[in-house]
Amino acid sequence: MPEDVWIIGASMTKFGRYPDKDVLDLAAEAALAALDDSSTTIADIQILAVGCLFEANAMVGQRLLSQIGQTGIPVYNVANACATGATALRTVIMSIKAGESDIGLAVGVEQMGKAGLLGPAGQGKPKRKVFEPRGRYGAVTNVEGVLGTQLMPGVFAQAGMEYAYENEGVGFEQFAKVAEKNHAHSTLNPLAQYQKRFTLDEVMSAEMIAYPNTLLMCCPTGDGAAAAVVASGTKLKSMPLEIQRRAVKVAASVMTSDPWAEGGQAQPDVNTLTRLAAARAYEEAGVGPADLDLVELHDCFATAELIHYDNLGLCEPGGAGEFIDRGAPWRDGSIPVNVSGGLLSKGHPLGATGIANVYEVTQHLRGEAAERQIEGARVGLTHVIGLGSACCVHILTR
Amino acid sequence: MAKQVPIVDYLVLGDPPRLEVSTCTACGAGFFDRRIRCGRCGGRDFERRVVPATGIVRTFTIVHRAAPGTPTPYVSAVVELDDGTRVKANLLGVEPDPKAITLGMKVELATFVAETDDEGTEAVAFGFRPLNGGKGFSDA
Ligand SMILES: [Zn+2]
View (tube, chains in turn purple, cyan):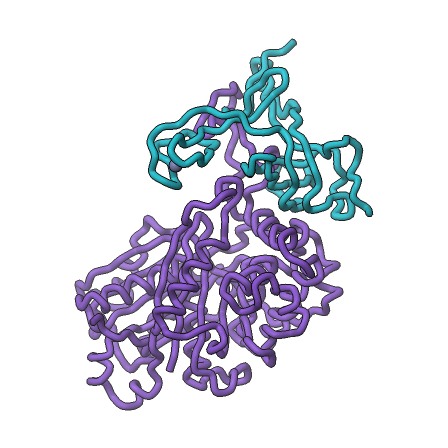
């Protein structure tokens, strides 16, 4: 029987722009706060996993230890697109389950600045241009914008519109309502990059980026870090009662990649692997969607959040439009979703996101989420997708 | 006439131009890219197969903000061809306006010159246009 795994410390920096800091400043701030939160020090930590997508080959984990304490422990630097932070967390969880460590630290960090649109485009042109087939499709030139789009805003717009094609009652307005909600939620979160409420009309009439996603329906780029201290059940029993009282159980930790699906080659399929991850997580945790008190899911675009209501089983099959129309995912609704403000408003420093959502749920389960506390929360779910694709779902309970 | 090459190798120029997939002989899955094994069943043998030139729009987006150098707005779509194969491309000959495009509308393959290189060779790309011609027929 593998060990129970518990979150005993969690933290995140405020998300935003930090031109005067580097990834080590941000990672150290989050790591040290998580250690303090668990009343431990770096000397107690037996494994470190760090996710930083833009500096994935730069040994950020070891450089972090050189700043906060070089103890010779194993360090894993991981990268998994937008699931990078969750992958770091899961690496520590796996080590504890395997019995190799009984307390570890996971850190996610990113410094993006104003990165603009994300995706494989805009490569420099050679001086003399002569068509020559390259790559596995034999492309003779850049195909972005010529054979459709593979940039993030368009990909997620198309994912949403495909749901609208397959289901009734979904259109521009339903997608926009998601952003209206998350911006409203963010006004209660002092760590969110933006804390400004917008009307539905303001959301819908903002600059169109990729129909149906307007600017206010796309997450911003930004900087930030998040961290979690994770311990085995056996270790937790030896720790002070106050730490035990505040500990949150990792009831499920699941990662999936894309199973083959028709159409997966035409555009990334963000549905199938999410459904697979959710099913496995509910089984592992022994809970169902009706048991969830809050959900932090991957709303990189408003269209994405809407389809994940269905993928995670929060609504009736095909019923995501009706679900948002009746206000179910608002903080006073039947299943509050992204009460942190979500990626749309809290921000999305890529590597930090998959731990920041765990921080958010942890705060609620401890009853420490201040103004935005969901009263009596006992079960929460976190979800991220890294396009390409990697999906992580964690279910936390207390 | 200028020399022409297809922009990707799954577009085969000819009269008419067509799209081809590598089809797994074991399970029938079709792939546009150069394959090692079948991603669905692990099969190792493939044969080339021409896919239909007509289908329906499963989903679309109208891209207003794009990478530098890409003219906007344009309509990107995923088309489900009549045999179920799905392919991504731009919609041609439709206004970049959600009112002009209907999910499920019928479209057909069309080609156009996308770019010319320094030797005068033309790269021919493909897209899909509404099956009965004209500018979107979907205001109904
Ligand atoms: Zn096969």
